[in-house]
Image (cartoon, rainbow, N blue to C red; front, top):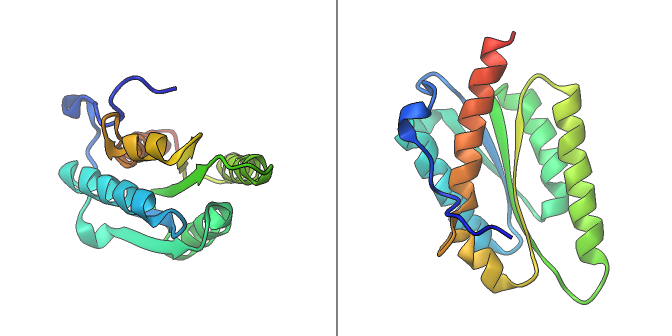
Length: 161
């Protein structure tokens, strides 16, 4: 379980992001949480130099659909990085495990096969309060963390071409 602020990072260590393009695929499910993650990601990208016109946001119905959305965004936008944002809250059925495993494997496969980093900004929590705590609450915002990771991975990808 996270115990540190997900929004904490050293701005001085950030690569130049002024020429980067980033696609964000956001799940509509648990919109209170994913909307906050999206805001955090967009704000952090812009604070670090990504121009708002170079941030492309698309929505998918649920977390399971993030993999398909990310793959299509990679093909259509040709971004430097893709961020997927979702939230799965444990319930009383095995649905939680199936969705979490499916999206994790899907995003891992995209990272293995492609040259564009796909950043995993999916919250997998036991309850809604844990999700809210990580979507702008007491533990910061996983969207911020995903944006920082996207910038760093896009810079690494560009460096290692």
